[in-house]
Image (cartoon, rainbow, N blue to C red; front, side, top):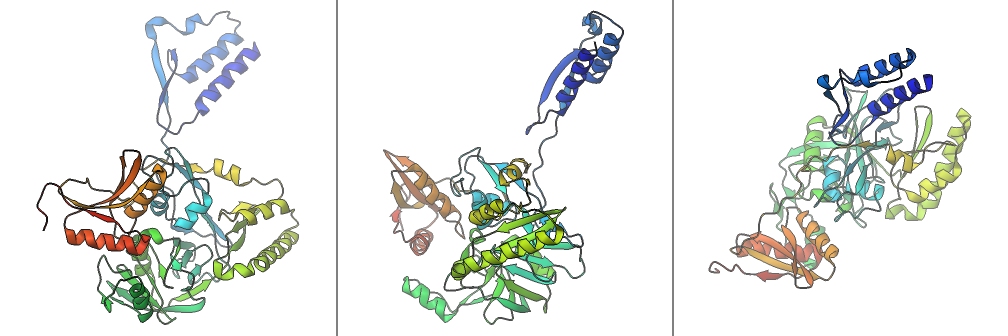
Length: 469
């Protein structure tokens, strides 16, 4: 008798504990009042020795009982984090499933991540052509760099800026950045913000003039504020002469080594930081690929591949972090899983991972990440207008491989400003067509940019329904 009562009780617990990623309703039982009354009634009936449950379900009083499960959230904390005293790690992991026409850079920007963040954490997912239904991990957990919690700290190794507001010692703001490419490295050291400029003009350095001239492109001496200005709408000058923290007109370069040494932020991020930062604020630029932190009595390690400039120092950097971990674990008398440490260093995926013996590995961390609902449209996700026969266009390239054609089209759509493009199947090939362009002049400007950025000579396609000027 008690086994039946136990079975009924367990069944009810299981049914009420069911979870789902989408809203749905389940008809559980047709009963007089509710699932709870069912459980109580079964229990009382069994205890009283009754041999039938038919009296519990009078047909003339049947009702449908449903359980509604809440939808998963659409968002999670991405930039502004509480920073309790003594803590050195903030944030949490989340995940989202892709849909048709999604690209990892769109997902990254929507959730305050850079290209580097999302690509290394999802190495098995194609950045520009992920398959619909792919699960994408959002590495929104960060170990703070080993530097004073004062002003701005910029870690080149993970291309991330941390801002510690003076009047809010219990908070930290963090933003992904683009930095100087090889040969144009962002300088390191201690400096400060010496000036702030809204709607800045760009005085083109002579070295950049020469670089563009070698590619057949001539730049003016000064580029005024607007869509063609690579500084974006806000700029903060550093004490390092010629270097700035600024916005960008190419937002999908955030999380890459792409600039001539300056530090770039998404347009929406620089606007916030510009308003918060003050002239004289200290700025410390460092390179720390291996980061450690204690969090809730657990020791964590976050690893990134050292930038090319420090490639020769990789062995020494790894030896140092292993030494630090020996000291940290010995101080608290805990056992480190050194095999896991080696795997984390080899993987260098930027995900803070616990390293004590019997602690969860990255697969378990990923599986337990907060699942988010797809927003339908990501922030500022490119939208390509319909191509009409009255529009100018460009035949950029043809491929036998559909994926390669889609990748190029997606990358064109993510240029700054956008070069609208789409993949079109023609016979047994896949063409990448850029457009629409409303004039021959607009088309020629786009063709020039494609030549500059992709080294591809596109073929102009004239409008078919109107006369050509």
